[in-house]
Image (cartoon, rainbow, N blue to C red):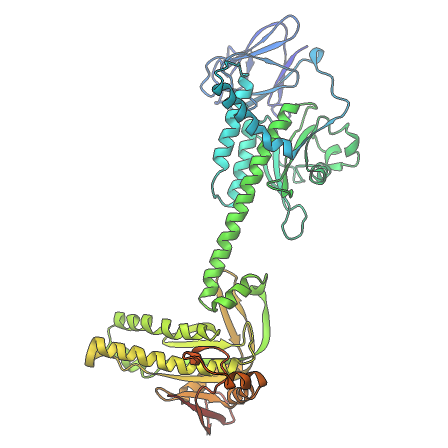
Amino acid sequence: MPRVTANPGRADEVAHDLRAGEYTLGRGREADVRVNNKSLSRSHATLTIDERGAATLRDLGSKNGTFIEGARLDEPVALRDGQRFVCGDVHFAFHAPSFSIPAPESIVQEISTEASRTLLNDLLTGARDRRAFGARVSVPKEAQGRLRVMLEVTRLLAGTDAIDKQLTKILELVFTILAIDRAALILIDEDSGEFGPPVVEWGRGISADGGDPYSRNIINYVRERSVAALFSDTRADPRLEDAHSIHYTSVRSSMCAPLRPKDEVIGVLYVDNLSAPQMFSGEDLELLSAFAAQAAIAIDNARLYERLKRESTLRSNLMRFFPPTAVAQLMAKPGFADEAIETEVTVLFCDISGFTEMTGKLRPRDVVALLNRYFPRITEVVFRYEGTLEKYIGDALLAVWGAPFRHEDDALRAARAAVDMQQAVRELAEELSMEFGDDAPPLRVHIGLSSGPVAAGNIGSEFFLQYATIGETTNLASRICELAGPGEIALSESTVDRMRAQLSSPEAQTEAGAEAEPDARTEPGAGRPPGRLVGPESHNVRGREQPVTIYKLEYE
């Protein structure tokens, strides 16, 4: 005897046996199949059973509509055994045992991903061909509905939503095109190559039981073969004999399609029915496969968008601290943000002389304007000599050579940068004098350099980067800077020793003997002394028990 079941597989499931005649479905008291749900009209649809047990479904102009496989009914449709339909938000399943179609010998039906990619194109091409030749070919309402749904899917999945929003949107859409109880998206982790945690959507009235809402045997089967598969009766399928997740849950029918935007499977889309076998058809599998192809492209685009966004944020952050050559190397070095190294560096500390007194004479906005002209000039010098800008501290700048990448002449680079900074500040002071005359602030800087071991690395996170060198060498550079007067450059003994060693190297001798270009003074690695060393001098500094030996670097 034919039977219609409201809310199949759920706690409030109700089955109605149907004899020949016409039955009204709705929420009104006069309805033959009554379901108390606000989404239903009082008389929502009719189900007509003929003497042979065949059924015809007709919508009665309901407000929320009647749907089969996502397509809204505009005219009566014959139902097949096992077919599902939706009135408003209520799911129904129709069964006519005496007219059931025998199950195929193979319980698993498969569709290749290559075929699924062309399904939507074929539908569109066919529609164009019919218009081009003026043919009046009748297209089944169900096929029209599928086409409308796929076009809507393409529209909705186009965009640059974040990956989590795209996954949620995909699962919501699959419930609109198929009569299913559960759906899950399981993506493959890009690092481990294993399936990651699933994103799951449950049908109305279906409660989560805490376990995986899918069979691992099924998703592995689909991933390994890169085919969409329909499992008409999961409990009877010999391929799933060891699938405990199936035998000990109520899964009866399921489909699974690979997510394959290009050549590689990036995950799977799984849907199932919890109550009845043979609930899905080959057409359902084709639709799921075509949908999965669109979803895979959307997911791949979302991943690409997020990756480019992360890289753009990271690159912008790096460019604040590192020269372009170092940025390119760091971008190609995965995990550098978590890496801490112990290395030998030369630290440069540059400070404006008399800055406190200067700020007392200037308006705050004029101080900011001055710093905004001052810092870019000396920062450009740091990057010219391939140093790392560690931080700005008020009016001071802290830069380092030797981290994250070392050069054989790091001490010389730092010393030459110090000379060029003094010259850049002198030029800025002349510009200010021309602009403001006697009101121009007396701009001069004093610089200190120190060399030695530090721990260097990123403090914070990859997206809130603060590259720092930690150690006595950094602290000493600040103390030595205090010993330098306006316009002076003071160096630690360790920095001078490294400069002399680097100047005496065969490479430096070769460069020193070569004919110099007019702008050779600004080029890293030029084999020339940056100026004349004066000293040594012995000084006591804060935080150190023993006196510190320093030199002064005289320059033109």
